[in-house]
Length: 76
Image (cartoon, rainbow, N blue to C red; front, top):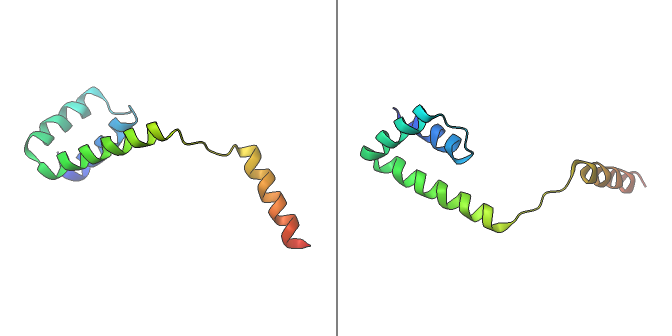
């Protein structure tokens, strides 16, 4: 597995989208590739931080309303 592929599988694994075989190939790759191991560790830490942060996103409805309010203010 190339490092580029390992990075993609690592990202997929973060979102629970990697297949069993992809995970297995990634684990083998991580045994001998220090760079990808570090990338995976940092990726895992980042995922944990985002989960703990309890981020909120604006709903699509609220975004549309805000856009409309901005348009109205600009056209005054």
